Length: 188
Image (cartoon, rainbow, N blue to C red; front, side, top):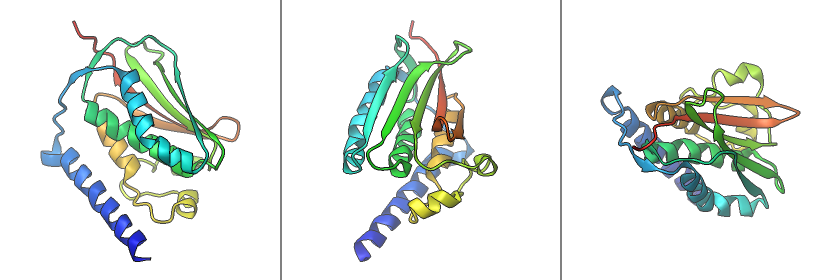
């Protein structure tokens, strides 16, 4: 239908504009500001909750640490976390639970945010390509044929620009979990 095609084109153009902004001049200039990780997570979950509700999914937030305000770019955080949560909703089955966890990384120098679902698994051979421009796994193409293959690329650029890293683990036992880190930079 024409409406669906128009929506897909609008989403693709928006993704390309986001990439263009993130890669402008070859260097992203983060704009750090005081932020509370837990509040940002809750705000983005609230924004995407209606998508999860359509699939009768429950988003559970687990906070495993007492977060101090940190200096980071909230927009970059939003691009990373928003893309990961949107994917978790899209690729999880109906009536499932999506778990978002905020904790401290083992190195104690970073916050660790994870998004877990029990949707389609990501084969190991696809794992290395996940964060590449326009890459889409075989299962992803079946579940969401109209995807652009840019969401995880945007998430990676934004996470790295915020001083963090992003990665994924997928197994039958624990489902698929995307992780990203944000350096802990306490406000004095």
